[in-house]
Amino acid sequence: MSNLKWWQTAVFYQIYPRSFADGNGDGIGDFKGITEKLNYIAALGVDALWLSPHFPSPNWDCGYDISDYCNVAPEYGTMEDFKVFLDESHKRNIRVILDLVLNHTSDEHSWFVESRSSRDNPKADWYVWADTPPNNWQSCFDGEAWTYVPERNQYYYHYFMKQQPDLNWHNPEVKKAMWDAARFWLDLGVDGFRLDALGTIFEDLNLTPHTVPMTLAELRRFSDLAKTPEELELKDKYWHDMFKNQWGQLGVHDLMKELRAILDEYEGDRMLVGEDDNIDYMGSGNDELHLVFNFPLMRTEKITPDHVRENQTERLKQLDALSAKKGWPCNTLGNHDCSRIYTRYGNKLYHAELARLHAALVLTMKGTAFLYNGEEIGMTDHMLTDISQVKDTMGSWYYHAIVTDMGVHPDEAMARTAEMTRDKNRTPMQWTSHPNAGFSPMEVSTWLPVNPNYKNGINVRDQEQNPSSLLHYYKHLLRVRTSSSALKEGEYIPLHTEQKDYFAFVRQADKQSVLVILNFSNNHLELNFSTTKEVGGSNLKILFSSAERRIEEISSTLKLNPFEVFIAEVVHSK
Image (cartoon, rainbow, N blue to C red; front, side):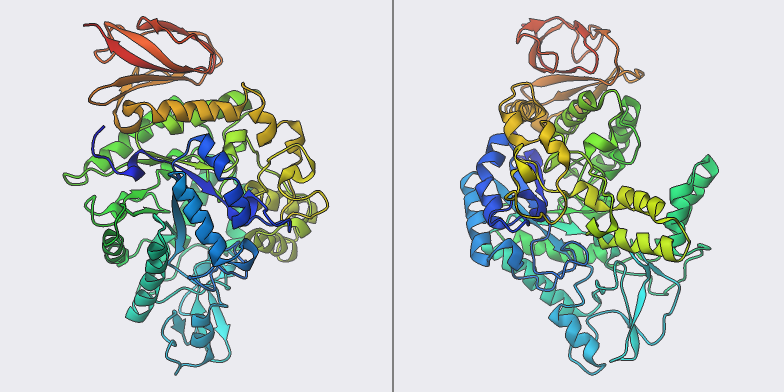
């Protein structure tokens, strides 16, 4: 093995704490529940956990509106419960990173309570204030980005909800307070942070208005109804133009360098991954973020060989350009903010087959892999049917905005809300076929409704007892990845790059080469790799096949089943 860091070879598993495991029977996930499931996580075969926010919060934005950066939300337990969870994770060689929200706090945070109280308060300048709204900027969640506070007779700025006021990072006291919060968790032993919405930390200093001829609600409605190529192109342009002055501004790089320097003070290779796809935030490769997500891989309605090849060619070229210490890739297809993989990239005929292909794609591409809890059992989006069920306030705001202001019928508004709200992919983890999917006792109302398909085998216990289940498929794939130096650290070499039906590539390390073939079609394929220098003249030792082939050596000419995932070590002749 080379001298790669732990976070380069790791597979991360994202836990949405509110929905993962209810340890005290109140319908909400908590640290006691997560700790009880650590053996399950270890047996799955992942290396690290990313926790969505666990901090105290009034939950206007599902925990991303933080009222205390150095504590645990009461519904999740106590600080002692967190420490037990962290210790038990480390005992199992599982690293833990936390969400760090830098852009904003809750409006109930003591900092903002002080700041809004008067213009003379010591924290008066900790947030972004203006005497009158200086422009037509929109909050990306709920309309106008400037909210009036009578105590100061001023307006504060918020990129997200009005309950999430933006911090003023030009104030050195703000910076010190936030870095102190980061040190608090690092001192406890957490292994790093996922940085939420880092591109929104600074705004255009000239406060330049946007030029889009509609409000946020109108733009969302326009986006819902856009169908023609011209409308779809205009939709994308409008979204960009509406917010281009509110993110990606100067100053973020200097902040990331400061935060990286703090992490580098600690032993154990603490790491940072940014909720952004801009590799510029990786700096020179060793002075800002360790990773940024490959979100362009996700930005497609359908995962195809051509799309993946183009993505990998462009992405790896960009990363390789980062100084002598190359940037490292980071791949995922799902998280708490987007439709679940099984739903988003499936189709009516081949949901199950495509889910297995997509899992193999993420786990065999070069780079660090991120999984989202529940995808290993094929959890799907759960479309809510009543606005009273909606907990995602971005969704409820949209519903009421289009019903009240645009006259949309409540039934259509609810259908649109169910599609756009993030509640659909945040429902409770499905552990058993018992009522409430074993997440909570049967008599308890869970914080979001449980997807009823837990009764149909989409739960952990049923799949643990079924050797051919998706859960066992994930476990097998993860074992293959863990045991293969090529899959963990090898270079990516694409093969047969003109083919539409399948995606073939080699991962090549110093002491091992592995051929990966993903058949994205319903066709039987006959493939010949004898003329490729990476495979030709060699035998193939099968490491994994979704077609349940025998573990044997075959030649570089092979037949592939529909939707087969084929992984084999290239055994060169002596």
